[in-house]
Length: 361
Image (cartoon, rainbow, N blue to C red; front, side, top):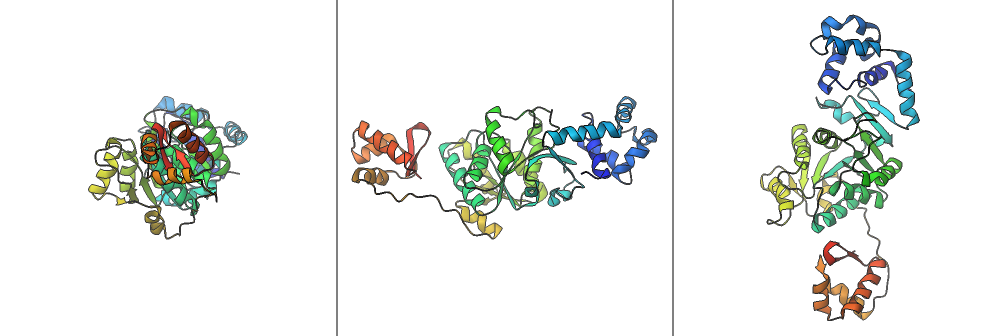
């Protein structure tokens, strides 16, 4: 299943004391990775600036084919596929990046690693505006055959993944932990759906838990997989800006959605546009034209005959409209209006938002 070179990379990744830089330095020392199996035992003098004698001895002790095969079989039993930088499935565009991960642990459709991707990232606490625009753009892009990449975090990430799945599109979740510790835990079911209909990846071994420093680092993978990065809503100091930084370093295009100039949640995206670090997006066509694909998203609209009162309610809704404003425009009593709104929501005509706001579906 795995070549000898791939097995050598899997072995190198067993040791938590090896940083990515040290892993790569050890692999670069040998003519090819598989040479470690025969030559590592005599290489301490050459590697002593990379590992201590204690670390070297620990690695040498674990340089056992039976032990390594048992580790690989255990991964297989957990339905975890290992993709190394020498694997055919490895995202080819990431091979050009000096900080590319040497290994990716995967569950799902690994062919998506080399599909046409757009990363969508943003705040973990989006406003109603941020939620709506993220859902709209993610559905439009995913419906048109582009894979949505995000980080399985709360907020924009969750909306991006869910929206892609809702329209039968593909999505990749890049985690900041191993498969045995999904974070946040409330996204456990979403993660399982992505495994089934998309792909979940992480550079962390299955037993590794989430840590705050994992997320800025994993953002390089989110950026690196994609042709462009879309930031729908983010503040100036949002962790999302780490993804922005990687995109700039890699020469990847950045899109940003403008927001109200008084909105803290849009201060980051507005600044990106103002500083000319990104292209402004106001419609899904702005993104699809960049990818040279046509918009195939057709929202489901039920052919329903509206009553006079329902039509009045629909006419009163302009963007995100509060219940009080709808009532003010329609002059309908509270009980009747609540019934009308509930019926129209169940029929998919309108959508209820947080804070007693409504918008057309």
